[in-house]
Length: 304
Image (cartoon, rainbow, N blue to C red; front, side):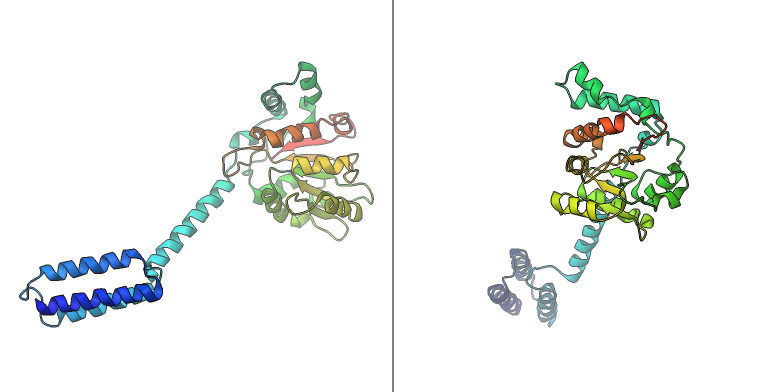
């Protein structure tokens, strides 16, 4: 029994010195104290000769492997796996979408926008809401697109909804401004969609991601004025500001894609976010666009 106590005390003392040297955590010390108590409770008959030394050596090696953090390689692997799992869950949450939007025809989309306007503009008069109203003829029917409304499918969605497909989407008229606007809910989503639309980049026609958080308005204005941009991707506020600054021309825009199915990490769509939906509707109801809905030189709203 005396030998057992000696080894236990030696083990505890060694760990205390290691704590001073490596700032070992309390969890390891508690394990050492528990080991000492268990060893002291055992009799000489229950502990074979040489066993305490073996136990002390093995425990010391385990503590050494754990290092200052008190975590073993297995613990670290488990933590890494858990972190990867959480990252995967976050990524899945970011790619969630509202399947109902994909099934809406122009009439249902117009009604959906009207109800959202009533909700997000509660203090507006009936005349003001009428100015913001988007008629059924403003919307392109894309309910026949049978793929999921997720980022990797946006390029095929655009091609299916565009006459002459990729050829038209990769061509720009000099000085005409973009033919396509993609309206998103955030800078991150803008970057995600821009990556998927790189297939439409060509020598004389760019896909431009206009991220407000990382680029000042002045930089976006200069980019739009100095480059041929066929597809412009950004949030409603930044696109509205570019129009007001004269850098984004709307006369030749042929299609406006609203990223309406996408849900962010809080499960919100662009229709539920007042700070996004208000500038979105104000942009879509501008006179230079509204007068072209359903005409011979149409601009069409598509909800992805």
